[in-house]
Length: 402
Image 1 (cartoon, rainbow, N blue to C red):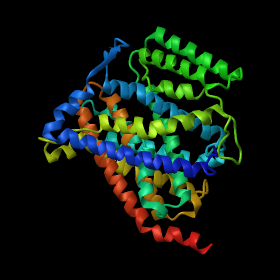
Image 2: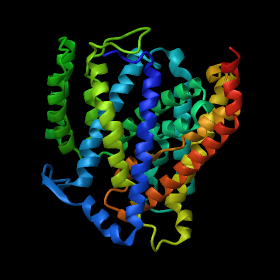
Image 3: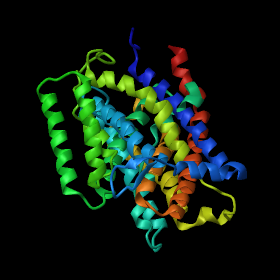
Image 4: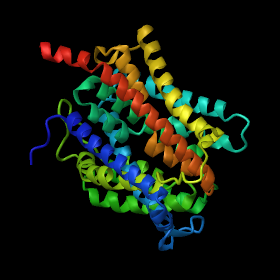
């Protein structure tokens, strides 16, 4: 089978379709959570016991737990593979390529967190959710860009996807360091042994995927028991998968990392991420006053995503260009870059995930996080789409004149 000539085009197309699937699944969850005849069944299904007690600290396995702790580990495995590929053989392989996305991503994580803390200042217990608005949902953002078609130049699509990959690195580090409970030294030691074995396989030149995948399951089990969130196992496992660099070409057919990416991507894009959206986006608005939008927690999340992301990303890019540290991506105009910075405020999947970790066991707080994430993400999507739509004709002109 012939591989696609453009890895970027293939990636963006699949991400866009996955983003649309995520939107549909999340919208369905909101409908089911607010229709009287289905709301009880929807929430009851999420907590159905569907497996044994794997770890005492987690209790019986439920549908919600399987998706958030097991299926999302596969999502993070794919994230880790994408990060490794970009660092070794892609858009982050050199410092010249990394400079602007790293600057934009760092500012685009720090400012939303700062705004969240400022808005929520003085509210007891709210500070633990500081990382919720720091993340960008690449599937959702690319899905919005897909709806805009040619109005978004390829250079800006490349910039946003690269920024989101750097953003994912930061989110993984935050999850590992900030949202870790009491550690089980035995389980942690077991995870270290399994990871060391995977590294040894890599160093020894093992190119078959089967041993890595079997050990990855064992690694997930050890990390699940250890107190570190189980999804981190996915990223750790990804770092051990061998990759064959392919300079000037989209991918190597005989590269284990590329092969695994191709296997996982459709399952993650069209099953795991939409399932995550379906089980996590549902929030019942019935009986909630409109003033809930101005409650400290949802307001802090929404402000961090909508204000913090666009100001942080756009401000950092402007400063980098004005000081000569980096050039504007593809010669794009500032209104277009503002639109891209706004789309970076769509924090859906990762923000909901971090919110669940930050307020674990507090259903009321998690519902408020969902409201804030939905509000901030929708506002960011609408503003980004409007700004990029206004500049669409200008972005098509150069291509037509060639």
